[in-house]
Amino acid sequence: MAIKPTVVQLEFIFTFSWELSIKEQLNTINQGIKYNTTIKMSNQSGISANEDLLNAIRTAENNSLVIIEAKISNDSTVVEFKNKYHNVHNLLSDLDSEPSYILIKDNTKNTDLYDFISFVPDLAPVRSKMLYASTKNTLLRQIGSNLINKQVMLSEPQEIIDFINTSSNGNSEQTLLTESEKIGLQINEEQRNMRATQGHQLVSQNNGTPNSLTFEVSTGNGSINSLFESNNVVAFKINMDNEKVEIVEQKTINSPNEITLISDSPSYTIYKNGSLYYFIYSCPSGSKVKERMLYASNKQGFINHLSNSHINFTKILEIGDSDELELSLISSSNEAELKQTEEASKVNNNTQKFNRPKGPARRKR
Image (cartoon, rainbow, N blue to C red; front, side, top):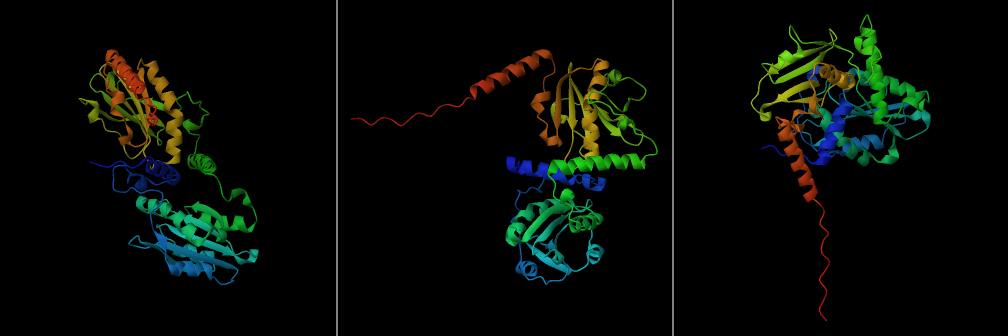
């Protein structure tokens, strides 16, 4: 039986996977971090820097530009000194698909401070991404905050050049951003890429509202209602190539315990249990920001579309990975069962009240 991580671990894994899913390639997504796998770690890995690296940072010569690259050792025990450069192009020529830490000091600014870059390529293994993220804070503490200026996370070599140029020009506007600002910029970038790569305007760019469906729904030869005459689980995905919401799976299960959700991308799943319909929007860790944006913005429109076909949902659930699905929420098969379940839940919540502890017994005189 798999052991669930703590709340802190879950929070860290979710936040980090969201941060790294920006422009994530499909082969990374398919590795699918699951909360019940062995790749679980808290926000501290316990890996520390060796003395060679710390000495290289503290005793760097006064060349105009000093770049120090560090990597986690193959046995994942220490952060070790990898190389030193005085030219950014030499650094870029040595970079590969593995993450690394890069410290840059520009002595022309009359400062001893380093800019700290967490370089995490999109195609890096998911485990490496997790390991570097959970080691960063320990490394920064060892170096000392008095030696660190800016901290950024980059995923492409060109971004390193842009960062150095931006810093050299004294433009702090694009240096250290909050997570929400980073995500906002990435969404804008994804939208620009979509417009640039398509020779026409996408259906999804027609200024739809949160309640509108900006993709055509394809159900094959029959109607949506006819699908549930022989199935009770139907899963849909958005096909970006033909700009349609399409059926990717339809089957019949005997109980909620048998339900399985798509694990490598977001999806909409409809489950009919008896006379009740349940809508499940799942967005697994590792999903691209573009996918998250499209599925989230079209969810309510798709629900409204189904409602027009007289498919009304008892519950609408939003989850990340499939193991977050609470089966008790989709276990009722009729209104009577649903009412009993809700009443039992209310009773249970009312009985779980905080009991005031008794005070110490008074001493007898």
